[in-house]
Length: 98
Image (cartoon, rainbow, N blue to C red):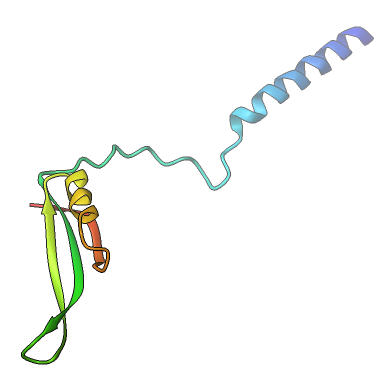
């Protein structure tokens, strides 16, 4: 009789140990469902560059802007890498959908 009681206590303890993790919730609540990755629609990669240029008629410098666009991010970055080092990138390559 004493052995049956020990066995039943052991079995109930094992059941409790196995069942607790199944009932536990994650910290911060349940995990939200995974969203599918964003698919980029058709569009263009754009960047904006600025530099200072001497203006003879005003006798001072004028800030100039240039907008760069390419069908791929790599193409946009390649155009930026070929610019004069004195140019400042105002907006790095960002995607704009049509």
